[in-house]
Image (cartoon, rainbow, N blue to C red; front, side):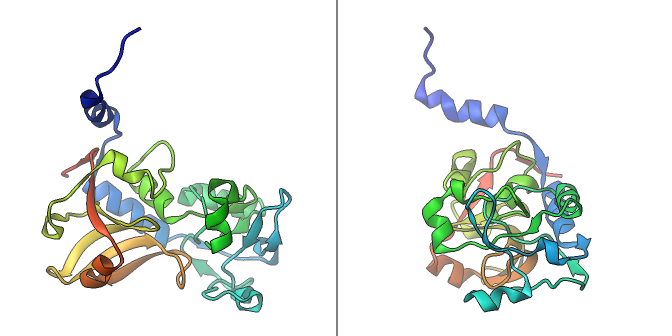
Length: 225
């Protein structure tokens, strides 16, 4: 039996990592924000799915279920892919599932966090924060916020951030686009949690991110354009 030296494992991960350019990562992120679709009543769920998994779609009736941030409404054209706990849809697969009558999104909650991966409903569609980054990097499967650091290198300084890098803490991840005010304010994409519940472009304050435990990381498979 042959053994792999632990010191060689990072090198193997780098060599096997799918390659993606910075422009490709940002273009993929943007494509999620441009998805347009027509919500229907059949896309709403507030309660258990057929497997007994609790689901709350981020539609405007969400407020009636003691939750906030619902944004889409049946009969009114919607834009962007909704957040789904454990979701890993592409824009194309999301639209296919919507056409098939799947539920549009599923918000994060303490109940979901307690369940972990088993809290993902197969009857819903959309994407979550780490699934979104995984798609932007063209990864073959979704990497959770607990796993992303395994395929990344931590940057020595926030000043080293470049398009397609990430800011990660133990619960959330955002895709860096650029500094709008160097060292202070940045532009990013995220599959947003409350109060957004969709993929969106956002402006974030660096100091606030640091206060919440975010750190800058770079995917080992990312390439300059």
